Structures are given as structure tokens and as C-alpha cells.
Image (cartoon, rainbow, N blue to C red; front, top):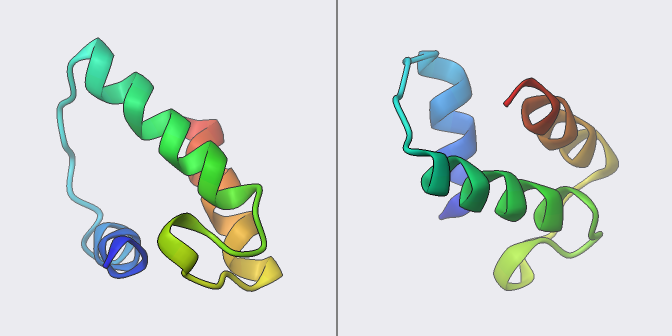
Length: 60
């Protein structure tokens, strides 16, 4: 589900507004997922997907 959310967000390129706390939580989740071979909740991420999440995280 999380993986699909990221793909959907990247595909639609919608602007979202986040509170400071929501932004911190999102950064934390992206950090955890992009630094593990097995992402959140056991979702497997390929090296390319981890790099993509890292790039998203760096722009936040």
C-alpha cells in the first residue's frame, strides 16, 4: 500500500501541504523505508526504488 502511495504521488505530482510534525513523520518513514532492503511492513524494495525514495526524501 505504501509503495503504491509513493508511485501514485510521483505520477500525479500533486502539491500537498503538511504541518511540521507531519513532515517530520513522512521524512522518518521515507528514511526507514529507503534504507532497508525490506521496506516498511515487509515490502521488498529494489535498489532503484530505494534510490528513488532517497531522492524524494532529500527534496523534503
